[in-house]
Length: 292
Ligand code: C5P
Image 1 (cartoon, rainbow, N blue to C red):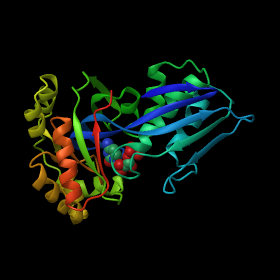
Image 2 (cartoon, protein in one colour; image 1 turned 180 degrees about the vertical axis):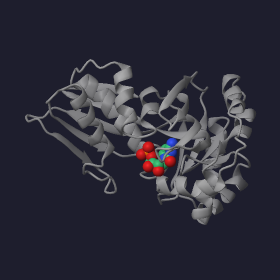
Image 3 (cartoon, rainbow, N blue to C red; image 1 turned 90 degrees about the vertical axis):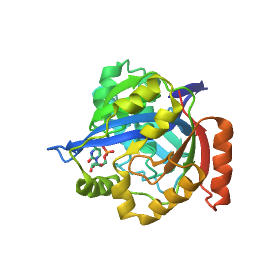
């Protein structure tokens, strides 16, 4: 997460993510699922601005009409939670400019929540340590903890146990956002029909990352949610087939979708894939690098 001070405002860049690997280890008693997932932050960033207010309110505005501004909003929940934790009563005006597709499985809401925790800790001079922020993050959502660390990480438990990995060498992705959203809860419900006791081995993508082995990483791309989500939304399976014709074997659904990404070895290849995807008639296509 990057930030800069602009006058009395703190500006935070909140990156998106893709899941290079996602296996479901099994259902949990709390209704969630145990995950084994490798997350990679990508350089597609929302911009969050924190500005002082005269009163003690936490005010939020956003340029995207689909982002709810009520109490379910993760940024508001994060701000309320950190303020309560630190026993503060100071207000803030938060404005959010969305770039990460809303409902696209790229973790935008979680990244914004993590940005709010890191940013407000600084903006309000709360002096909370990383472990405190992680404790609060875990109450907000499964990916929020990842965004406190960023870069590349292996996440387990509900997703909230984050083991940072050495940042991947610059990876290049072509992202395709199909303009629809997949409710995460629906994806996991459907996944129950597709669970198997034979888990995909996470050691292969970990080795690929450690050894900077691009072809092994490409071979290791895996997402257990893909089959159930394609079952629910066959149009996404069709989109993957189209992209596969451009870059065979390197296209994957990110998280619970709906975004798909194509892993590319270098910027030139990514430019070629982007161009070919546009020729297929896909318009919401973005070329990004890993973020670190
Ligand atoms: O934690 P988050 O709010 O992002 O999760 C959204 C929904 O996705 C949860 O309510 C749950 O139904 C499902 N989920 C799950 N197991 C996880 C993460 C999410 O079943 N590890």
